[in-house]
Length: 630
Image (cartoon, rainbow, N blue to C red):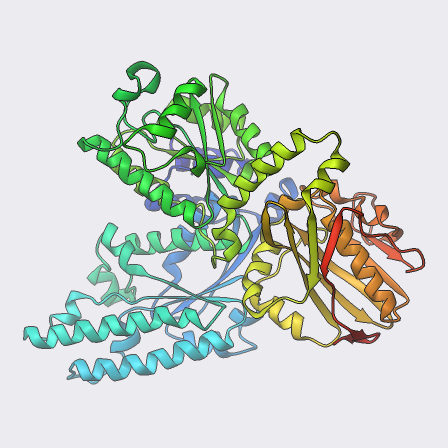
């Protein structure tokens, strides 16, 4: 079978690489670190303008790279890793050994490039360059204190997302101390430095620290002594490739491209054996060497589900025996209530995945599919190309490693809504039962007892609001998302308005499900963005929010409200939302006046939309002046 880099080389040779860039993620889907680095070298001369001409929605990620020592070697694997996830890398490189100047000079290239990510690679020289020629653990401890101070200052000063890393302690340094007691003291000092570096993320919201220790544990040596000595490259190629993979996951999370649901096969994936052939007594997830491996995999899945990853099943089996096994088999860690959807039938799995996505109100690119069958995986890649596919064939002891390798569910910060997601989907099933038993949709809405609140965000909610803006696709009227720190600044700025939407119904609290961002100037409220989770669409929540907001604008003595709709590939169903609430098109906002471009809508606040009769309003925005919110 042709490997991904070989196929890329062929496309490049034929001059088709830019046109076929949408095929690159599938070609590189199963490449390891060296394979991604090889792909990065092949993609080095890519014409970004040509890629965007053919694929205009391809994200371009600007990454500034600097460090204590030579850091440019991370660019090739990083380019390949971003390509694996359908993104383009625009690197901006600092000079050797000038990371403090690179990151603190407002007029420097690394700052003026407005990077999405700023990588500052730290290595042993970060500390050892500050110790005397003859040194002891106490000298390294002092150097660590100084380095932590510099890192904390950078985290506060560098705009956007700054990425640091823990620092490996090379044997070539530790074993310059010949007595074991001093080595032990050095090891403790070094680990304390790394622990305190990691803890900086607790107070610095725009800081990410990549822990290199797990990567070193599964990879090769930290460095090549020859490259370290002659080229000042203190982190080896293998470690940089693993680091680049983590940065690829981070870039994906920053762009809101986090997967939400893991769909699992059963036979050979969730348990050992084939239920239809061996019967319930012939499957195992405990009690045997292979069974124990499946049990460990299920425990990992349980852990992911506790953090908001939805689990679902797509299995070639009869439904009855599957549900019986999930209910009563003694080996299983996971039970039927742990799954948001179970599809056990003999239909093609790409169709099952589409059905699961519809049932959970998710786009297909929110799904990850894990299966032990190469044939089933190939069929899904062909029939459902937006779905990420994880190969779990072969040794079941590797299931956990293979599932976690691509960080499909990695997010910047976990919120209370994330942890409650599985319970929310159980409530969805109860709502479905209520809908099925109602005579009409209006009767269902009345019985649902929807409540909506619109008010300012609480201090701890900015992470959730940012996550919502980045992940929401269907009801994202501006087509954009905002990082946490930028939202906090906007909320505090004069004349700016940031409100959040909270919703509940008879089946429970839906939590924070929406946000509105606006600007008040010259007697007009301009709606710069409006986002609402697809979980609550169709229940009158969005109309309630706008009705409350327009009523508040009139109370403040404003003369009008304007709103901008920016069409995307996913939000077309919301195009008529503003007109349905009494807004009229003011003018196309696009330079070409295209009907498919952005549109500015206008409301004169004369005839206001009403809150739907079935909705109870629990919170409204506080008082304010016509020249800005209080």
